[in-house]
Length: 454
Image (spheres, rainbow, N blue to C red):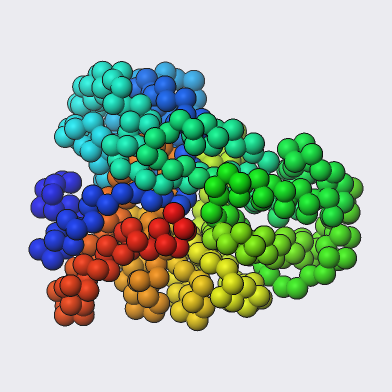
């Protein structure tokens, strides 16, 4: 088996056969961090650093680990200097999936077989720069070349969705949908919560100085997203909490928070629980999927956050998340009334989430997330899900990508890992081969299409 050759990640003839059946399926991506303005403007990129490094905190973290100065990562160095700095240390990334992703991108999108290193950096820079000048390397052309059928962005409730309106009119053959991401609405103890409340009022034209107005503005935003083709919400939350909270109680907490008072932990938990239940109610009315991304500890490295802000590589995972008691009320309140997809950043939570999904037919497990979206992490998760829950109910792959050129590589890595995991089950006599083919085709395309209503 050579490096990223035809047998990449596929250890048996059965796995090769299964992958061949799903390799060319269209991509349905329910969760990405696509820069939609970049897509609709369709201007393309100037160089390989813009494509591979400028927005990818996975790359940034590994460069820091190998001693690259921040000036050549997120600082004022030129893009070529940053690319050369990346190439200098890139051979030391071996064993990490980022090494594979970036090489997959080069091979699949640019037809470049060279391995990235100090000896090839200049050649790759020049070759890709010439290619990026061509019309086949605009964002829209690449999305079509990668066979992206549906792509969901991540959008704040205050967004005007102007780029989505342009996409609906101008993009041919690619369905781009917004995803309602109300994280800031829940974080009543965060520094930016009041800013969000003011922005929401300005965006929706509804007075948010009390809870009644806040809920009306949130519901209006929800309706606005529904009118723009939204099919899902997504909530990123470190420690979820759900319990019955009266509107009177929530109104008092809202009043204190709006006035700038410091809330105690119980008030924070109750407000989060109240808003989470409201999100469930709004989603039930529109038949949206409720995605919960659980357990990421944000901005753990203080100096990085102070210097560069969020989403720059300072987030971590933790085992210290309670899921059973904290979500029992939510799951039972919306039992068989709301499609819920769970993503957990720490793999030690798989036993709990898989058994919850087994108990509730309307709860599905999402793709191996963040630190786990590697061949090892994906196969580990798939094997466990198949043991406890049903692979047939798996929610499918998401790119979760902040760079467009990697959408195809992420889905290829998942499909190869899926084919290998299921192929192993066939080889061990656990699954008949015809059913294995049905399963991988269902998981790669039919299941997410059905679940999200694409």
